[in-house]
Image 1 (cartoon, rainbow, N blue to C red):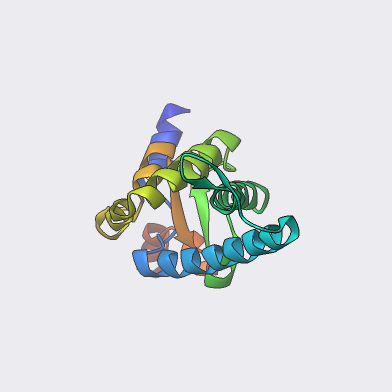
Image 2: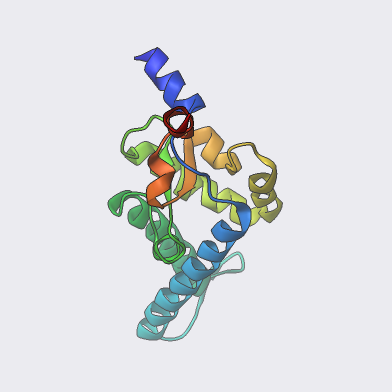
Length: 161
């Protein structure tokens, strides 16, 4: 089992999604989060300060963002609306279905921390597997979804020789 895991982790059969396509998906997702938050805000009415300069609308937006990214990623096989539109998805490096723990660590804790420290997103541009910090910590990656991505390139090379 350990050897199989290492093999899958070191020799994935897919193409990683780069920084810019992930950034586009994130912008689309944040537009969705903003729209949902605005609808909820309109239903509630006026904004109010909860104390310590924390406003209700900010709390609603953070809650919607965390729930949206976590639940969408878990229940739609690694995709949010932005990822669906850009044809990418989150996968487990184990090769199995994403676990709820992976999704929570990546989307809840990771997204919150990275949104507070935006420069952490730049790691994606330079990491070998194009992973963000929390992708690395949760053993996940974002891949492009295309039929040829699931064919091991070594096998294709050997077949054509």
